[in-house]
Length: 128
Image (cartoon, rainbow, N blue to C red; front, side, top):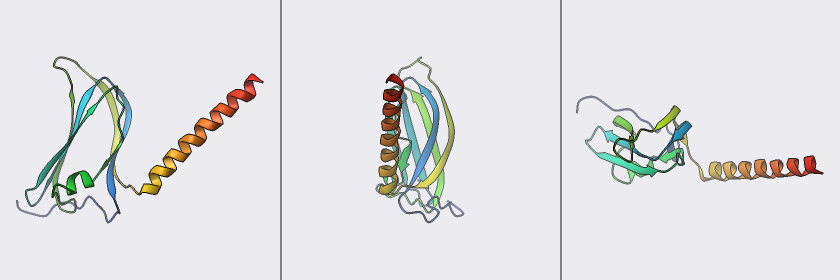
């Protein structure tokens, strides 16, 4: 291949793709394929049921297979229906490269817990 690739890491520690999933309906197969400029290729595949999946896809899924994310030639994201003849509906807002430190996942979990607790307390106050 001629030329140089794109550095998708942007110097970030533990970068990942973040998918803003606005809605998803039905079962489908999600795949992401990364090609680097040295000719290395790796495809990540995940079966998604009822639109529930993690919106983060770590770069380590690709680098563990030898793909150089600092010299990327192409990235392909694909969604296919699980069954032939079945259509799926969905909306993707954006795909972004973000750092994914472990503390960020803990923060998201903690915020979800706080939201759940505040909702429960609000219901008890209204019932009383």
